[in-house]
Image 1 (spheres, rainbow over the protein chains, first blue to last red):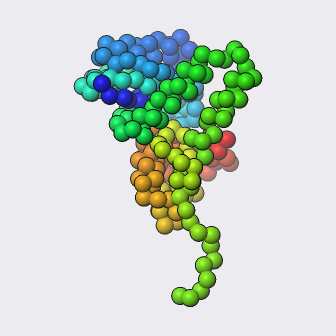
Image 2: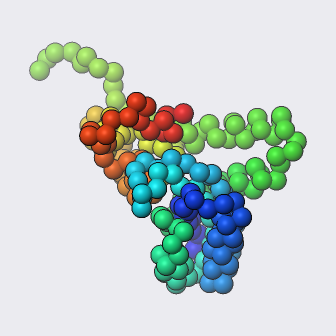
Image 3: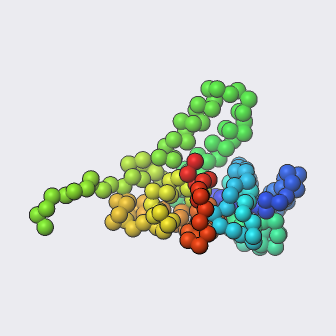
Length: 135
Length: 88
């Protein structure tokens, strides 16, 4: 099992339900191939830096997961077939520094998704956390 | 030759910030190592150390492939505020 990060850019024309359906489809593929998803991050619809298939925008979704090596080829094959995914990028995290970053990201996402309700104190913590990575 | 140094000493900003891994999704970190036309700046101009320069290169190339930052800037099609989403 290795640590991976998968980013997919989905067509902007889909409705919310369609998008969720596509993401669930992707999750199913991942899990069927033996991946364990640690966290998912929806970055929302963003403007693309350049046109892709005549689209100006795209919704970015990131998955953090561990998976056996041969799973990646299969998942990428299926992503290529699916028309709704206009771009994807798989990144392998190997050495200790990279893994530390992977863990940090997973922690950050789970923290965010866990605590949107208790507002003030929690949000401050998150802000402080993001500072060192951005500097 | 004997002229005094006119510029501030260059140093690696990523080392200073103790960056361990450069995330390609974050255009803000990469901006420092990109020229106005979004080319990768050489080490001699940014002062990056070799280790971080290599990380930056990889991150920039990944960011380009996923349309986070552009490959080229189109001079034919001029927009009022280009890449507003990158500045924020």
